[in-house]
Image 1 (cartoon, rainbow, N blue to C red):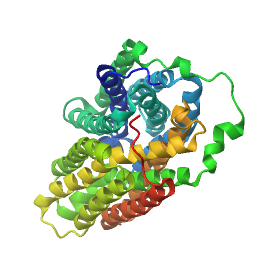
Image 2: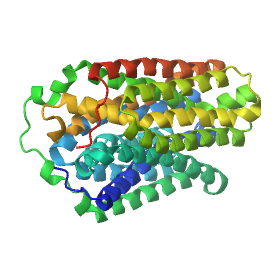
Image 3: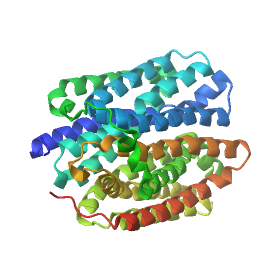
Image 4: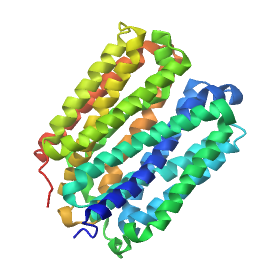
Length: 410
C-alpha cells in the first residue's frame, strides 16, 4: 500500500524529489560551459575536456548499479541525502582546484553523488505516489532534471561574466546545501526506513533480474540516447559556431533553446503518457521527430536564424519521450521483480537500467570530443541523429518484449 495517497502528499513528494533531481542535473552541465575558461588556464584540449565528463558519468554509471542495491537495503531517503552531501563537496572542490587532477577529483565526487539519484528518486516515487499519478510524477521528475541543466548552464554563464569559474563551484555547492536542508526538513514525508530489508539474500535473488533480456534492452536504450545528447550538450557551441558561424552567445542560446524545448516537451509528455498506453510507440515517434530535426541541422543547409528553432524541436522530441519512457521502464521493473508491483526492491532494477544513461553520457563526450580534435566537426550532428535512430529501434523492440505498457492505475 502506498502511504501518501492524497493529492497534497503526492504533490509534496513529487516536488521534493524534483528538487533533488534538479540539483543532480545542475552538476551535469556545470563544467561544459566553463571549458573555454578552464582549458587555457590548465592547458588541456577537447579530448581532456571530454575525459572530465567521461570520468563523471563512468563513476556515476558504475555507482548507480551499486546504489540501487543500497537503496533497497537501507532506504532511498538516506541514500539520497548522502549523494547530495557529496555534491556539496564536489562544488567546493571545484572552487579550490589548482590543476587538472583537482578537477578530476571534483568530477569524481560529483559522479559518486550523482549515482544515487535515479534509483533513490524512482524508488521514492513508486513507493510514495499514487499509481494513477505516476505519469505526472515522472513528467515533473524529468522536467526538474531539465531545469537543473538550465540552472547549471546559467550558473556557469553568470560566473563567466561576474565571479569566474571558482564562483560557479561555490554557487553550485550552495544550491546543493539548500537541497540537503529541504530533504532533512521533509524527512517524515520521505522516510522509507521500514522498506529496508534485514537479510542480505542470495546472489540469485539480488541479481536474478539481469537474466531478463528486456532489462538489457532498456540499458542499451539509455546508453544510445544519452550518448547522442551527451555529445550535443557538451559540444554544441563549437559545432554550431563552426557550421553556421554563430557567436558563442548565440550558440549558448541555441543550447538553452534545446533545454527549454525539452522541458516543455516533458510537461506535455506527462499528459500523453497518462492517456496513451502504447508507450514504446510514443517514445519512438517523438525520437524519430528529434532525429529528423538533428539531421536537418547537420546538413548545414538551413539559414543561421533557424538553428535555435531546430534545437528547440530536438528538445521537444526528447522531452515528449521522457515520461512514456519512464513508465515503460517501470513496466520492465515490475515484470522483472518477483513481487511485481508489491515488491519494494525497485532500486536495483532502476539503478542498473539507468546506469546505461551514465554510460552513454560518459562515452558520448569522449567520442565526440575526440572527433572534434581530429577535425571531424561536421560528423557530430549526423552522429547524434544516427544514435537516436538506433535508440528508437531498441525501444520498439523493448515494447514488443513486454507487450506494451498496461495502465497502472490501481
